Image 1 (tube, rainbow, N blue to C red):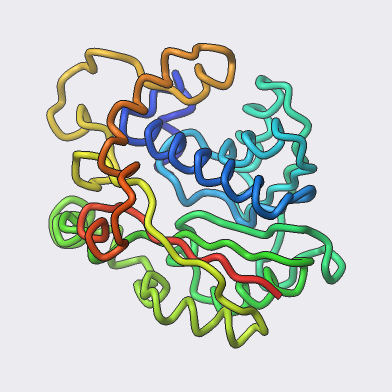
Image 2 (tube, rainbow, N blue to C red; image 1 turned 120 degrees about the vertical axis):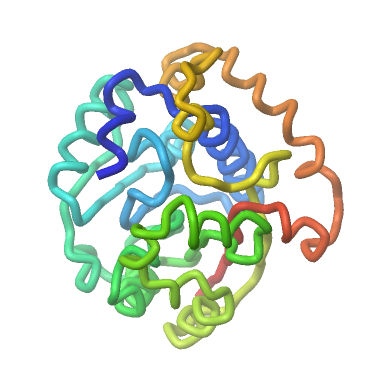
Length: 258
């Protein structure tokens, strides 16, 4: 369980903290445009680092937030993290093939990088569409990113054998969303820093002690110095076509609506 090591001191590394800031920046734009009030993240667990905190930004912007997962131990850790932060986010254990919510329960239903962890992600997408009142947002790892072969064939070769790589195919995810009765209204790329996507902190490769602590938990508890990572977003902030950003972007996203 990769998330467990990040629960010790919450040090995640620059890459993950940057990734979270870019996610929050996108959420800020989507909130301004679509005015979400109720949000479901289902399931959590797709981002390296401390689990369960990707929706905290939405809660602090006034949304009623529910998150869930299929891993009981991870969910217990998430509940402790949320209690430490003091945010009123409901966290529940679920079966993703049959979410325990009525139809059209949430303005936004979303997840980040989790589809390839499950064999039945088609059922998950169908359930996301069912419980959404309006929008579904899905992020997937970008297999066109230039460092993807390094991750797949060298750094994480064993892990990749366990993943369902069908669910990081952009076209496949879009087809499944349409099959669930949704209309694609926006696609894009996110997390485009000046370093490759290796899904681990630099010190995990070099074995050297980090020069600086990077922790989104520290930021959420008031340490605004974490915001210094924004200086690396110079390329990501440029108004360039997706095609140009695609080779260096770590993730792609699809926003669909009913």
